[in-house]
Length: 99
Image 1 (tube, rainbow, N blue to C red):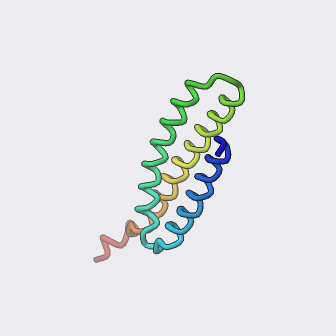
Image 2 (image 1 turned 135 degrees about the horizontal axis):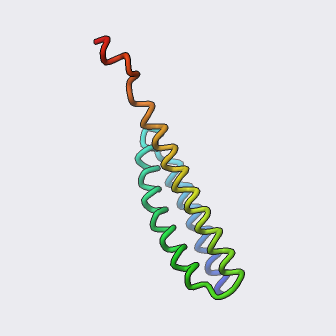
Image 3 (image 1 turned 180 degrees about the horizontal axis):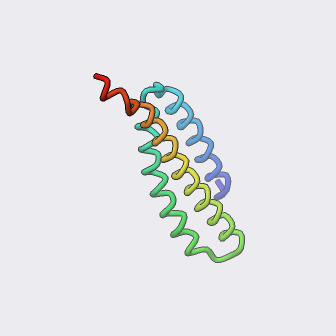
């Protein structure tokens, strides 16, 4: 197989496996899953920065920049969602004094 066909095959298989795994997760586990996803995307960001540093053309630089941007966006969004989810479990300030 040629390189692009091989990479496209791997991508499609990963998308199917990822969809099947994520669709089976109960909603109570979404916050821990998001935290784990943030850690993985931190590794993706470091890899994207490394690859971008080794880029040798305009196309590679553009793809590298897009990878860095999207990985950063995913990390920040994941932390915002995790923070909002954890805020839901905190009590209101007046509830502790009332008991």
